[in-house]
Amino acid sequence: MPLSRPQLKIAAALAALFMLLLSSSAHAQPVDDHTITAEGIGNAVLGLSPAELIEALGPDYQVGDEVRITIDFDGRVVSRNGTVQFRAAMTDDTETLTLFMVSNPEYTTAEGIGPTSTIAEAEAVYGPAMLAWNPDNGGREFVSFANGPDGRIAFRTPGIGGTNVGIYASGEFSTSAYEDGAAIAAVWVICVSGTDCAADVATAESTPTPEPTATPEPEITPEPTDDTGSGTDSGDLPRTGATELVLTSIVSVLFAVGGVLVLIERRFLSAPWPTSSS
Image 1 (tube, rainbow, N blue to C red):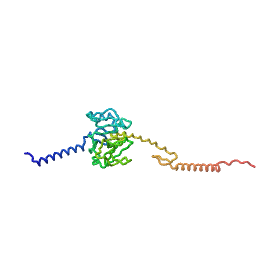
Image 2 (cartoon, one colour):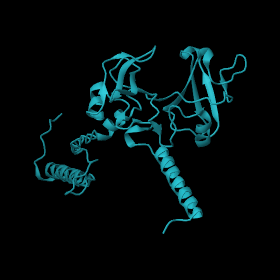
Image 3 (cartoon, rainbow, N blue to C red):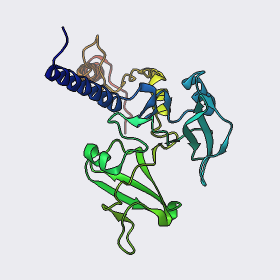
Image 4 (cartoon, helix red, strand yellow):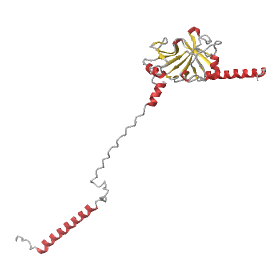
């Protein structure tokens, strides 16, 4: 049975709404390996060496030889099917990749904000924007948001030096005003090597903590027994000096008795000593 005109309109409206929901869902939930996070981009995490990056990405990606990524840093260009996906730079004197720069609009944050997103669209997600540029940083201009993602994620505008998209008062380097239609040109994800890079954290967590070495207990040497009687032996009564006193008393008595006997013998039992006559 053919549908009436009102039924056709209703069916068309439902189909359009369904397609819109699919499109919106796809934009808000990017493919995992295209998601920009504070740790890196998909399976490519900050802190890897170029060789480790190649292994993490797999055979579908091509990692070029070292090139000058910016006026400041060398690094590698990551491509897939002939299209540049992102750039990985080394910001210190090591072989560690500590900066990912994404200009490919297929890559977004979990909230769907990435290269080519307008600042107005990002404000709707992250809150009020603040633009700033620094002449000492190559004149680069960045935009941050009141409720933006982790601090390691930075949104770069196409502005540099005198081509900024922010509208600045004379002598000012920050502003909340920007040109109509101003957009994000690139997303940077940066870390400090050996400190907060995702690869460093993963390595630290996977490294077992060594068991502490037991400290041997010192041998306890028994205290020597005090011969003067101040110490005690666990099996004997304490020495108080009473024994010495008794012995001394006996000796004294015997000495006195002996003396008395000598006097008696000489006085009464022995003959008188001869005396000379005058």
